[in-house]
Amino acid sequence: MDNLAGTLEEVRKTLSTPVYIEGAILTRENLSPYVDRLAFRDTPLRDRLPRKTGHGLAASWNVMTAMGSGNSPFTEGGTPNEDNTTYERRSAIYKELGKKKSITDKMLAAGMTFIDQEAEQTEIAMREVIQDEEQFIVTGDTGVSALQFDGLKTLVTTNVINDNNNALGFRTDLLDQAISTLLDTYGVKPTAIYCSYGMKRAVNQSLAGDVRVNLDQTNQVSTGVDVGFYQSMIGKIPFIPTFAIADDTTTYVGNTVSDFYIVTEQARGQQVIYMEDLYPLGKSMLDRTGAAINFMVTECTVLVCRAQEMQVRVSNVRIA
Image (tube, rainbow, N blue to C red; front, side, top):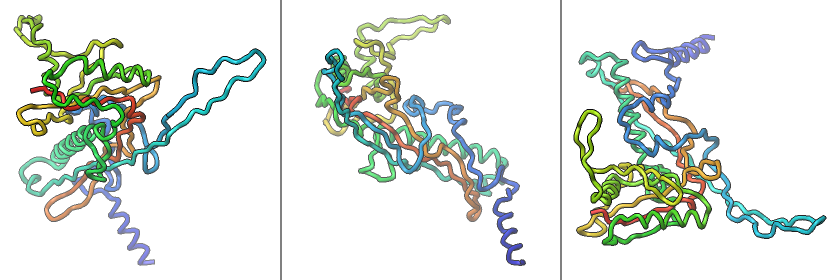
């Protein structure tokens, strides 16, 4: 009986909350609602892609690889033809991203309360995790590290246009070629153009001859041009610049090249590219180690690109 009482007391101590921590130790705090409140996140791709709830150990889906067409007519009173639509099963394993943070006794002695220090360190950890997620959306590669999920640079293999440092640099016919490929081959309309800030600058400079001086309502003078969309044969497609796409200054000595992605985020009423979370961004308290109280901010997620065939990567475009 004494042993049982002692065990119950240990459980009570484990579940009880120390005075310096809000909430039970074993309770994981969901931080997802707070991400949108962070100013200056600089994660445009992560912000743009919807999130879905995952199940099991991996996201999985079917991709239609062939559809029977062309023989729908049939004779009166007869039976229509049957064609076998074929599918391919694809999957992506959820990967854990996270940061550990500590609140030291010295921090607390300096004057800030535990709650203030916890809030500051939690915000830093959240920013670090979502910045890494933004990077992996583009450059993640399970071949480099099994702890990463595959990003667009790894996933997009069917439609890759290599401009090979062409001296003409950025030009709209590269966009038209990619858009035409998606329209003619797959019957889909791309929804965005992901690019680096260097590529975005090259796009702006392509209209340098059309720059005008502008006056806003407060008579502030500005010059230059910021191209937010490409007016294509299917309508306006937004440019989405991100730090996750880096400019390359080493492959072609003396020149800078970069990539951009013409992506189909939705098609035929379905989401094609999205993030799937096994568990969302959240915080868990760890323990006290020496003169520090530790906690971690983690998530388990993966980039789902249901049809890499509906995306185009244009690589090695000279921008400088």
